[in-house]
Image (cartoon, rainbow, N blue to C red; front, side):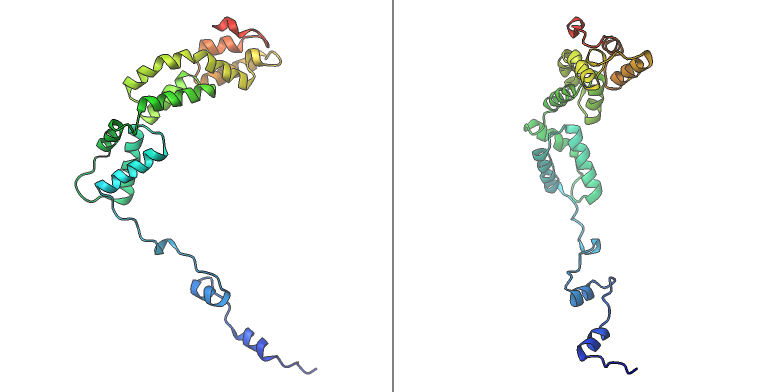
Length: 211
């Protein structure tokens, strides 16, 4: 059987090379696909100096509530990532300066964080652990301690309500289950004695006796 002759357009298309993913410009030329920029095309940011570091710090405190310690940690990381030029950097001094200007308030940050954690049902030990993580100083932590102590019972009851423990349970648990509930409250930062008292209460029992 005789082969049908190919049309000129078909022959022309068949002779074109297939696009290669290894050549982004060929993709653009043949298929109309814009070549993507690779990481090699991006220029690294210039090293930081004192003015650039201050701009970074201001942008950070404008966007986030923070502490002096957290801001210092952030600035040290940025210097390590981008390098430094000029006189010796002093991120801690810059953090102190912004605190003096009112951009940072460690005590207000600690109070806001402690209140939020209490509303979630987390206890004193968890709060003090967070204070250490974010760099709340001893003086500020001591000033905040009475308010945290005053929320101890409410936070524990909130935790128990969320987990259906003690007076918030629908049925009384057996001993192994009660021990698990006590352990959960302790992990939530609550005192062992208070945790045991709440977990030992009968479903529906009045929590007023805990005050």
